[in-house]
Image (cartoon, rainbow, N blue to C red; front, side, top):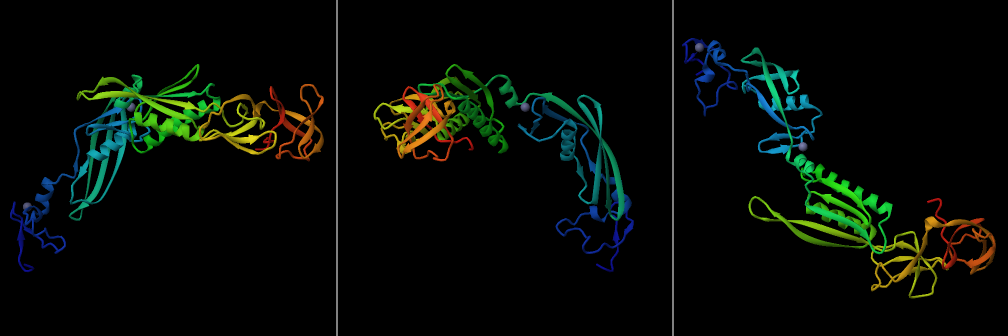
Length: 374
Ligand SMILES: [Zn+2]
Ligand SMILES: [Zn+2]
């Protein structure tokens, strides 16, 4: 074979021997490769480009319709989207080596970007170049998710309520933050159907409408994990989908415990002194403001022992310490009357302190832990 001469199968001209590495695969004993350069380049098509590219873009969120679904592409603007779509759609001939290309987008009107693409490469030792222009037409639409958001679609409601009180500002704000964080996490994993439809404060708490039951469940579980309390769910049949399956909307009713950390309560069942609540997750836990001893409600009482609320850490006033009487008693100035008053000395009382936080309530005057430097 090394001595034989090869001839172009099309024009019959002699073609130079090709090296073994260049030779066509034996599986494809093609006439093609053996074409002389002039016949080869006659048919050579460097760049394969469509006449135009139509792109459906969601005008609200920038998602692009590909195949049969909407995809978030993370593009900043329509030019970025057009460049990405053109890159996907253009093809270059497999024989070409050292391919380089650049795109010069030209905004023709609001919805048309003309993409001038310039390609260079090398084939059969010959430099080749080609310029193609592909118009990209942007169709502004609304994706399924944005359509649902605009239509106030929701599949689940989370109701944040509290037992014998209204939820605190902290609990309400935390519930909103949890809802947004859960949705953001799901979006980050590519879930396009996760969104908060609406949050609305009511007289007795907060309602959060969300796009899936899964999100509703996650929010309510996270709330009771952080704050204690219970959750009940109830299904309501709302409709049938196009396949005739029943579609349920689930309401998650979160009931936060009656007392929150920082509350000072007076227990009905004992006279061991008021308790500063430290935790309402599981059984209520706290400290006695008379002695500083730990308190924990029984299993039966859970997070709602029979008690009345006297106030909270935030209601405390600073009182001047007059004298430490003994291990069990301190004299302080009543912050309202400024009369020296003997009160119980809890073990968290700092004997060096000049002033201490006190709570004056129906149960009397009590020294609270000093947490001002927390
Ligand atoms: Zn030829
Ligand atoms: Zn959208």
